Amino acid sequence: MLRPEYPLRTSRLVLRPFRPGDFEELYALQSRPDVARYLYWQPRSRAQTREALARRIEQSTLEREGDVLGVAVELAGTQRLIGELNLEWHSAEHGRGEIGFIFHPDHQGKGYAAEAAVELLRLGFDQLGLHRIIGRCDARNTPSAALMEGLGMRREAHLRENEIVKGEWADEFVYAMLAADWQRRDGHQGKPAR
Image (cartoon, rainbow, N blue to C red; front, side):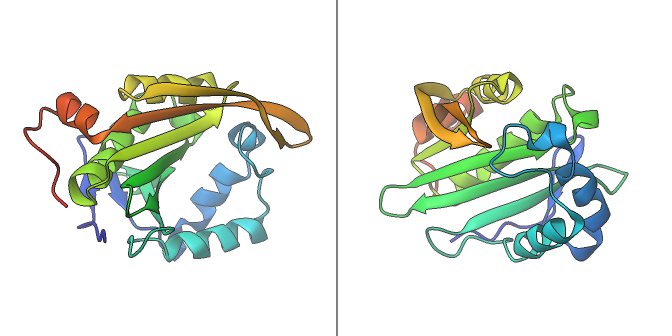
């Protein structure tokens, strides 16, 4: 079980649960064709964004495998939503999870996604006690692939024409990090807490 002690703060960001007041900024993010380009969904309408926000508001903890933790990312000092993260708990028995991230294009290329993703990895490994965390992206999404590589995740697979996404075959990259990799990266000694 994981119940983060919100807000989580980095030097430039605040990570927190979603709230109803996030609607306009979330819509500004999710309605963009350039944001949805490599995702499974099309740019979202206002109604679809309301539904997505309602789901995100309910995703502030991980109680059991299959749950998704949804985290809003805001720029410190501005209370402005610039992105979203998720951590999905795939298996308690095998200690597996998956991370994902979406950031507004105005805030890409500044290291914010990496800064926020490190905190999500910390939650997964140090607090939830996961053994392995994966991340997946469309193989054409070079910024996402570069982000995962920069985090120290290893590309374990290039799945050719793995799925039909928006009417066309798409390749997928699968990246992974083990708890031991995280410990070396983050300077930990011993095993993460369970």
